Image (cartoon, rainbow over all chains, first blue to last red; front, side, top):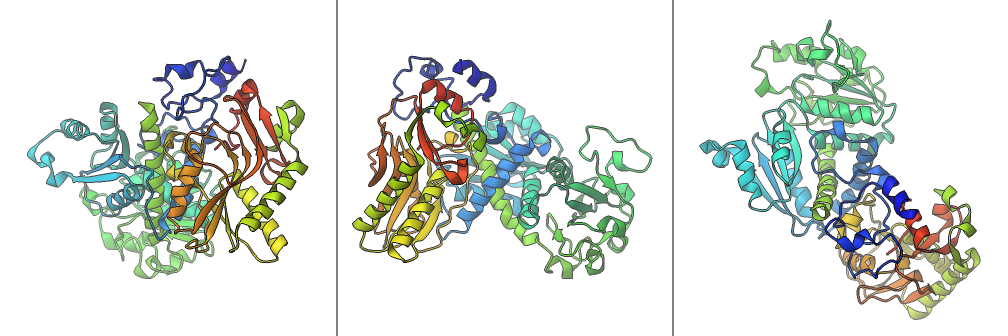
Length: 369
Length: 198
């Protein structure tokens, strides 16, 4: 019978069906007359097997390849909106997005703000240094206070890994992790994947080399999750003291870790050979007081990306950097602004990706409750 | 995608054959020319409206011998029901010609509640101010929820709610035709994404 087939094969669609008892009977004959405006029961299921239950974007580890694909495809449509003369759609009218940043940021915060505003949402920005957090309010009390003012999406950056997970477990609003400590930065990874795809086509089988401080880099961790799901070959290279614990010489790798299956190379020249994408990571000086990195000049000499080293990669390889750049340390100025660099494009693509993410979350949150 | 359309006869009642579909598009193209003295722009709504619009634009070009502007529009971001709108990814709209001050014909496969068309009217406004907006659909199946009507209709098909009108096009489905599915078939069909109901 059709009802059972639908129930077993279609992912449960959350939108307004549970609080609409009439809908429950709709698929069994005789069908009652549908009320105008009521959602049709026999709609196609989520594209590409989207679960429909995603409430938060915390890291890419719990994303399916199809879900990533869906966001990357939608970002194309969002980019088209950004290219128009009138950059405004009414899609998220009446939704409130709050950005709560406990760390400094320019591009990520502005990117989310622009994404929300282009889609017609109201965006409120709170920076922790200028809020009651500096009076000693706890994280939980801060987010509960903010949620009491009716917000739909909380975009959050926090210096402690895992903080957005804690917040997501306590509040009803959707939570987007905009960077938590050294753990994850999922929207950066999505925009990196999107930028690669625009230039290289399918990412599967492409060789991506990530160079720098992999231990403290939330960007690298999320990038590796995303790249592995999309089937890229990932090579990493960096000072041994700045490799994630499982990747250091002589240690066993945890099967479930982000970096499972990536290739670790000691010499940067070897890592760059034949790479389709070269990604230089920022040396985060704010996280370098533990003595892992003896000297910035030495780092630059051994691992900095310059034109000679970039020439070792595939002809026309993309040069990426999550920003902000320390020019002259991890990347030299000539290549950073050279023909192979797509660093500014990463920033513009970031807006499109965040539009796609906010659209996905807000579309769910309306019907889901 | 095409394999599920193989047994056409077993999958609902055929209400428009490939030949009838072709003739309907030829007639609509002539009607568009008859009604508009100035050159029109043809804009297809994603996804099957795009292919229909492309055919109409080609027909008008071959009838008149002048190139017809053809564009595509994804009204998803303008819908009032974003839940159903987020099922498929947002697709870039392509309108590379100025729409200001000229007639624009929107093309879609099935006219149903009218909500897609309402969204499309909002969407096209962000590209300019056409002198008039007209609507061409292959099938009008009734059940409007908004005061919207089509200017050019391939076929009026009275339907019951719960039935599904399925438009198949060579470019997408490998064959041309329109079928009407009864409720149980329609539910089974709903397991397959795609297929326009507007």
